[in-house]
Length: 194
Image (tube, rainbow, N blue to C red; front, side):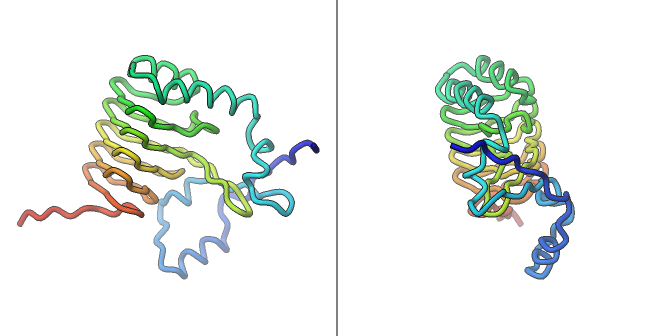
């Protein structure tokens, strides 16, 4: 088996992607796309086929083993201690539901602030392997934020303090402090109060 190719970064701002997104009506001002870095895929295959050039297989294997233990452990103290060993920034009193999964490739790009709750089977991603590139971005979850069961948070997302993400939502845009979002993709829930 040939050695994997090294994946090199694309420039931080890809004008063609920005123009395409603007033409499609997307407002990317300070969006997750501006906070992610793109790396080209070498050769004719999709970027997942070249993952070993993006991250050391030994690091990923270690991360996977530790995160597997985190997923099944009932001890919140042990979960937070183990995740800090992987380079995650984990605040005081953070609670992880069973089967919740931080990024296995780059857990060090995740910050979870004090008293946040990550629900059962929620996933926090710092990478996206795509056809022609892969992307990396930090994820920040604010104090007392709640991520519902089965929700997925994409790379480059910032979730504000006291924000709520409903169960099974896909977070593709930042969630302002105190806001509740739900759905695929997650959008702000409006109050029925008059």
